[in-house]
Length: 386
Image (tube, rainbow, N blue to C red):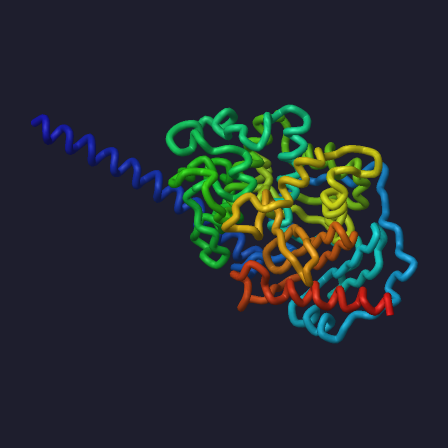
């Protein structure tokens, strides 16, 4: 009788669990079907802000425009660069030299004010929020534990998880970064309406802080931690700490999971334009200074734009790192070929926004199209000196 009772209790528990799973799957399938019907495709696009809910980040009350370089647009684009732009659907290409716009062009109906989805460029923006949170005393440093603010990550391996681990992509979280599987966790984060719940459900399955593995869930959890630490939404923090003092010329949109919870998709989906994205590049190029104002601590800027792990010299804390023709650069980089390249010693910033990237090399550390943008941009810059 006791065994039968135990079996019944066990069976009821299983059925309840399955019911929850099926309910969760049904909700997601409904959300997925709804958005596919709405946008008529199954892949992400730089215009997705038109179809998802957003939070508005207002332009600065004192907008500051980039000055034009004396040689603005005097050097024409190379044939190879033009061909790449056409093949991969570039919508904006910008070269900033010595803090002045040296070259600027837009394509496919876009202009300097057009919005475009940055995708993972936003990971670098969240890194900026992390630095300012530390600077303002909301966090003690990169070693501050996530579990102090998110109780779900305060036991087991998760108890060792720090904000620095999240920013450097070394959380040990159970997450598969796959942009093609519409039923995978990355797609659920992009399409689903319960983003915070989804992130809290992801276990830490290996020791944090040991090695690099690119996971969008890390940035989302980092943003949640920052919000708990500061008591403010990350969109408000971006506005107050960066968008306003940097003189952003246009409103930005940050996609959210739904208008009820208003959870920003922190790992992606900050929508702006080439000129305003470039201002984040300038901020980090100038070690956190914006004119005479200190927006970030210089030691933090140096730290996050340097590699954390010897085995992964291409990534720091929210920034990609590399060399081109023996010149050091760091970059803000996003899906489909969104780029903000920063060459600090040369005082050069190169921005490319567009609809597609080189699919064959997308899994490589330095994709083919990235190399083309850099090669051709520096060929153009070299012509000026002749």
